Length: 111
Length: 113
Image 1 (cartoon, rainbow over the protein chains, first blue to last red):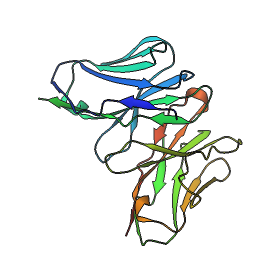
Image 2 (cartoon, one colour):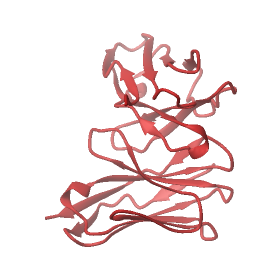
Image 3 (tube, each protein chain N blue to C red):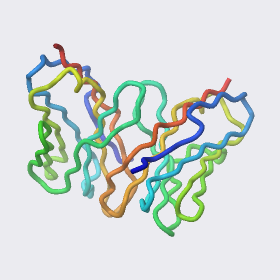
Image 4 (cartoon, helix red, strand yellow):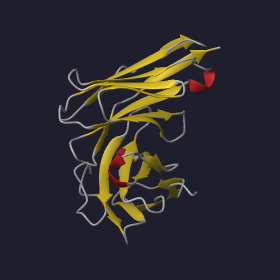
């Protein structure tokens, strides 16, 4: 059973701080990795995709991938109250379209 | 441009009835996915369609669930003889090519009474 694990949280950070969200996956053959944000009562929206080891930055968001450790993370710099949401880590297997989602980490940014 | 659309947005049905949920993906997207999300839970993969390939049905929870995709576009998820445990939000997503980046519709909230 391929799994994606996330700390359910809630993770609480003050406004302006860095929020660090982590994810581990079990399938060593996984090739594509994603972070989605889901506000309460809404559907998930794509924030970041990452396919190679290292860091990928997009505005206030940085995704980090370490395939050897089977670990993906998302850093949110200068956190804002509007970043308060559930963040879902998602992983695709080798060459496949099937995507496994983690259960999500709830983030609260306190003003 | 237009995003993924789903209908109905809400559906209340009696236990034992059949329901059909519809998804209209983003134009040109080749892959279409169905997920189920129970209250406070993560996304449960149900099925995906990619181009003309056979769908991956490995996530369908029972033979009461089926899905089809007509003309490589619109998809219908059918649940026969609904049970109370089928109550959830059913999400559809589409993606283009092998980026696997998925764009979600607003979901259909299904309540089985």
